[in-house]
Length: 304
Length: 256
Image (cartoon, rainbow over all chains, first blue to last red; front, side, top):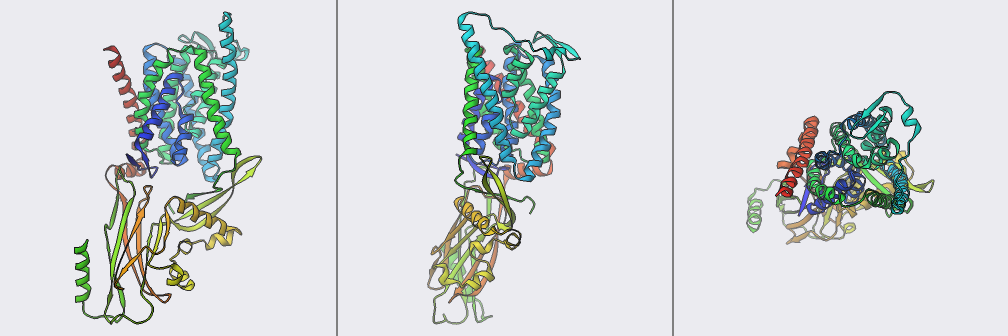
């Protein structure tokens, strides 16, 4: 059954979209990532224009994150205070990101930049996470208690605050910085930024893994929500019909994902996430390195 | 359909002689294409008759050219090249105006029907329908870019060159069908009929077909353009409610 998307102006099979949404939803629930890093490239692949894919992806992530965060909320694994601090940075970052996105669009380099961002960030994060979690898994098999690294600079900054749910007493500056960087990525890449934020929260801020997922989902809702609004206002590229189909699949997937995630150990969960991240990174890198079959591309000039 | 034909036929036979020449009387299977939510492309039947006061002239047979064209807009064509080991857009050409959809149907091989100078004058073939004079002044290799534009849009079924697809009956009645792709953009489309004989155009007739989104499609499209804030909030509300709804439903299912 084909559906004509009013903003993307293409006709796509409805079940393909439901399936894509479902797949991304499962990831979202399992890992606390929005799944946007997977969804946006997949939307490019089925022919959705990049600008629409990025904006609509952000909207879809709102839905699956709300669904996911409610599940975590009931398990009391959401640090509200930490989430709000992260959001503050995130909103500023998203505003900067939209400006960069629109500037690159005018240069015609937005596709390249978005793909490069994906390759670089997915590569670094996936690689680090994979190495770290394999090490952690080995240690826990040997029975040694996993040590949490204490980073000196995070604890030396001013404006220290107590984050009760996370059992932390740290400065608010590092979480704001983390939020800011993720906000930029949200706007440019159409991702929730969970794949950056989850590791940053674990390794830089030292938040317990259990709390990380719920809290990052909470932060993602606000930032992706704001990004959706900014894209809707400045570019008019949010496709409600596309978003709706994706999120119907997504919210259902997220519920299954949350339950699936609770059966796995956090180290196993992290290895799995690292592998997925690296696979997407590899695919995108190949697209940049191999000669494309069509060297030319067309953009209609709007309002012409 | 036969009824329509008969009506048209009797119409032009009964008309008093005004000009001693051949003219086009045109009909469409639909003069409006509605893009609905389940829009999956459209097939348009273009048919008509040649109105004639004098007897059929001797000599070369009559040929019919039908073109269906979408709105023309400027288009940026970009070329990828290898820079620092990766493939990236390295150069671009702005084509002055290119139709977003263009189909040419003919009743005989194109070259036999229309001379090169007449093609230039009436802008019939795909290459001529694209305006690229400015681009060619601004860029040396502009022709490569225009060719790429045509190639890409032909692959997307947005440009079509359909030789020998117009059927002519008795040198008078003609009909052809033109396929429009599912990813159609709205606007005013123009159907054009050219009658040719010995490479010369003897009649030229234009008629418009309105392609527009209807219903929910139209409502959402206009809302997104005219009330972007409201549209954004609507998108967010739908997302929030479905997220919460799914969570609530799953909790109910689990607690049972």
